[in-house]
Image 1 (cartoon, rainbow, N blue to C red):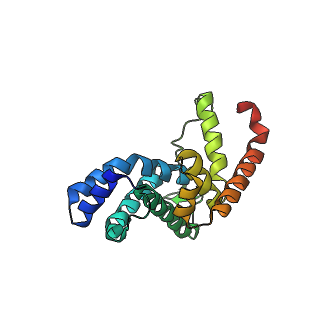
Image 2 (image 1 turned 135 degrees about the horizontal axis):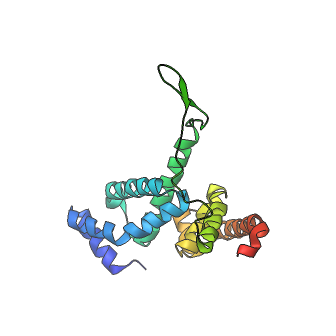
Image 3 (image 1 turned 90 degrees about the vertical axis):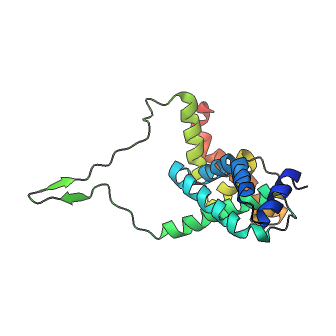
Length: 193
C-alpha cells in the first residue's frame, strides 16, 4: 500500500512543484545514501550514486504509476545506478602504487596516503563491522544486493522481488546462498562474532 504522504508529494511533483521534490529528497536522502554506501563500500561513490539516483527519479517521476511503494521504485533506481557504475568502472585501468613520478633530475616513487584508520586504532566493534562489510563486498553483485536490501534496508522478499524484477523464489534462493557464502567467509573469524 503506497504511503499517502508520498503519493501527495509525487502528485505535486508531477505538476511541476519543485518544493515537493525537495521534500521527497529530504525524506529519502539518508536511506538512499545508506543503501548506496552498503552496495559500494565507499563514501564518495555512495554520494555520487545518490545524486545520480535522485536525478533519474526527477527525470522519470512522471512515469511513476504508483502501483508499488515509492521507496521500492526508488531502491530499484539506486540499485540500477550502482550496477551501471560497476559495469563502467570494470573496464577502467588502475594506477599502480609502485609507479614512479618523473622529475627533471630524477624519479621519485609515488606516495599514496591511506586515509583509512589502521587496525590498531579501530575498536573491536568497528573491526567486526569492517570485516562484515568486507565479506559482503566480496560477494557477487547479485548476492550483495540481496543481503543489503533484506538485512540493511529491511525490505521483504516481495519488495526485493519487485525492486530487482525477479521471481520471489529466486530472491529467496539467492539470499539463502548469499548467507551461506557469508557464513563460509566469516567461519575463520567466528571468535569475533
